[in-house]
Image 1 (tube, rainbow, N blue to C red):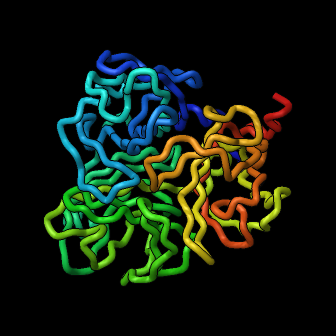
Image 2: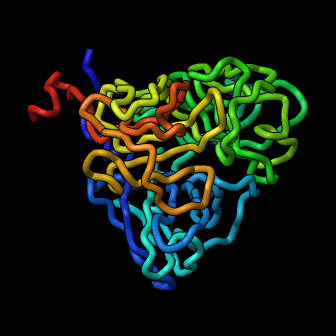
Length: 353
């Protein structure tokens, strides 16, 4: 069996940095694989002034945005992202929080299914018990799922991946409710808010229940508000491309090493024990060389900070800081996506190619 099915992670995920120019629409073109047409774009200002994260996807459409650091409901009729392009995206003329003149930004981009969605009629297919619309990339283990909430009751929704997700990020798009994160490394019934630093809470009634076809919804307004528009970003691990796991820090600058089987292009880490800390994000475009020094936090509007350093290595990542958000003597969960695998699909170490 091949070590990986994805030799070039940039076909399915890329980070890119760019400079804003205010009211002039302009294209942001990817520098990696030219075939990456993103379906989920997550933008954050890096320098200039503090401002919110912006999340746009092709299932909802380019004019609707969410903010990972806010519990706000979905904002419509925004022209920050004009289009999802075959090799990147085009910024609109609404400077919003994505195109201020002279400020620098990073955009993290994932490929789903080119904007083509599948409608699951649960009564007809027998998959789940709520109708849903999903846009799934089974090769890359990523899907975007939308549905209309039904509350109360125990419900399941189809995700389209064909394998069980290990992490899901939920948002009620209609109400000012916290984002919800499920992760297979959390205990059953636990969740985390993406827009907050708090430790895991245990108020789930259905556990994680992430199967090869569906995920379960808690009996709550948070991820299944009655009549509300809901969204979930689902992630299944793909060997050599993505991994969703946990590690224990050691409080030392010669910190923990975490094996992923690939050189990371993007890493998000969250402390889950002892005391509350931020959702820390590093990527390979802000920091092409080790150690990664330009940190952004998913739960704040702050620009780049220099803390929580990592080395991105050919087969994983290593903590290079005593910063409590990434390497105290505590437990952490992580999301990681590859630049390239440690060993190619032909069994050749990438360092030898």
